[in-house]
Structure formats: structure tokens, C-alpha cells
Image 1 (cartoon, one colour):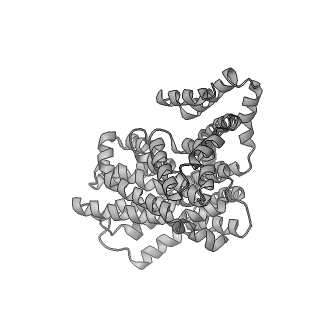
Image 2 (cartoon, rainbow, N blue to C red):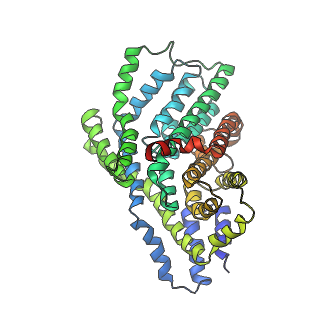
Image 3 (cartoon, rainbow, N blue to C red):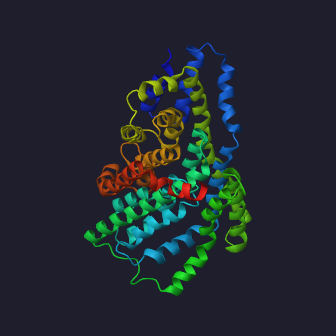
Length: 427
């Protein structure tokens, strides 16, 4: 009966039950049939995770990103991305990649970025002759950058679960995010050149136009710099940075760009509550599941068993990457992160892997899995909005997936790429 919840969890996943309910029901079965513990402990564990101060950063950053969409920041970033890359081969596709990189410092969510660009940018790409499958694939793949560039929601969750510095994780994500951007732009160039996808503008933007676009987007570009600087110099914690980001976004939307209206606030709050609820209900359910696993000593037993075989960090990271890619194909990234971090972090620590480096590997891996069949959430988000069949999306994905896996391999086995900025700035 010890493993009854895990078996039931797997069955419910296969039946395509929503992740949060699958976790909650399977954990409840342990308290009802296997543990002998009072049921009120289950309720306490569900509620206790909502008392975490660091997790306040999640609704704050989600709200800030939504405010920025309503406040006109997104379209200014799109204008800047077009001024920077619109003259290149495959101009609008290059804009797609650069916009995701710029938006990474604002939304922090791959699904939010994919949905936004599918609605705003993809119709224009299709109108200008880009294939629907190509447009959907580059939108899904470029959105992977958003959770890696600070302030990624996945990095906040990992920092909370693994008890690691969120500030160091934010810094660690910058270089991998830039590598993803560079790799995807290279593939876009090669594919666009072979298919004759043209630039979105005749020539490179003149310096005055580039200067105007940069000036208009400057308020948005200052956000990640302010977050990193404020955390580094002890002005505020990552959680407080989220609150500051919300206040800053409101000020910019109301007074700098003057596109945010009081009438928008109810819709912003509703969207924020719905987005936060999806994440928090998974966290609550996973906290109860974590109690069950700790009570039955499953993580400790697993660590003891695996450390006898996975003592070499190189082999450990290879095994973890393969395992996470497989899991991520079937389970949503945030849920996988919440479920697996408590299991994998002790194993990585025992093998001598730096846990900040390990966090970037986990978050990037599970986000990449979101574009892969059969159940990748980013794939389904873009396919449903753009109206592209999954099998055609999958064929178009191959060269982009290859470069994403190459970057994952690079940061996995070259930790200095990830740790350079955290060590340089925070010691």
C-alpha cells in the first residue's frame, strides 16, 4: 500500500485528468487507505504551502506581466525587435525570437508568451507568406526563452523547492537565454533562406528610428535590470521585487505610456487570479504529496539507491536529462518541476552537482519538453490558436528541436556558462 498513491497518480495521468486533481486525489488515497494518519493532516498540508512568503513572487510577477500587456509595453517591444532584426532573412520570424527574449524579462511564463505571440504576431506572419506550421513552431520554440530570462516563474518555484537563492538563479538564466535566442535565430535564417521567406523591411532601420524604438521600450527594458540590481544590493528580496514590479508597471502604464485605464483593472485582476490559481492549486496538491513521500522516506530511499550507481556527475546529468525529457512529454512543466525537484535535488547534491546549475538544467529541460509530442503544452497552445495539426507541427519542429537540445547539452556539461554571472556578481 506504500506505493498506492504513485500508482494511482500514474493511472490518473494516463486518463488525462487535470494535473492538480490527479495529484490531490492520489495523495488523498494514502490518507484514506494506507497511512492510518488523521485526514486533517492532509488538509493542513494542502493549506500550509500557501503560507510561504517566497511564493508571493509568483502572483506578483504574473500580475506585472499582464499589466504590461494592457499598458502598451508589448507593442513597443515588438517595434524594437522589428527595428533590430526586421531587415534580416525571415524578418518577422526573427522578430518573433527577439520579442520572446525581450518579453522574458516581463512575463516569465512560456505559455503566456506563446499564447500572446500566437494571437498578435503569427497572423501577420501568415499574411506575409510564412507557413502556418513554421509560424506555430517558431512561436512555441521561442517562448521557451521566457522562463529562462529573469524573472522566470519556473526559477522562482525551483528556488523555493530546492532552497536556493532566487537571485543567483535569475542571473544564471541570462546567458542560457541569450544562447537560445542566438541558436533559434540561426535556424530561422537557414530555413527562411531555403524557403525564400523575406525580410519584413527593405533595409536596416536607420539609427534615428532605432533610437526612437529603443527610447520607447526603455521603460520595459529597465525592469529585469532593476530586479537583478535590487536583489544583488539587498534593496529588496525576490518576493518584494515582484511587488515593486507591479507598482512600476502601473506607473508606466498610467503615466508614461498612458495606455492603461482604470477600466482595465478588473480584467487584469481576473486574468491574474486565474493564472495564479492554476499554479497554486498544483503547488498545494504537490505539498501534500511531498509529505506522503517524506513520511514513507521515498526520496531518501531513492537517493540511497541511485547514488550507488550515479556517483559520476556526467552520467547523472545525462540520466536526469533523458528522464526529464520523457516526463515532460506527458506532464505539464510546472507540475513536473514541483513533483520532481524534491526527488532529484538530493541526488544531484550527493553527486556534487551545483544546485543553481542543476536548476537551470531542470527548468530548461522541462520547458523544451513543452514543444514535443505527444502532450507538450506549448505545442498544444500554439497549434490550437494557429489551427495547425500536431503531426505537421512535429515535422516542422525537427531543426528547431535539434538546436534547443544542443543548448541544453551545452549548459549541462559546461557549468561555467550558467554560473559565470552568479559568481561574478554575487560571489
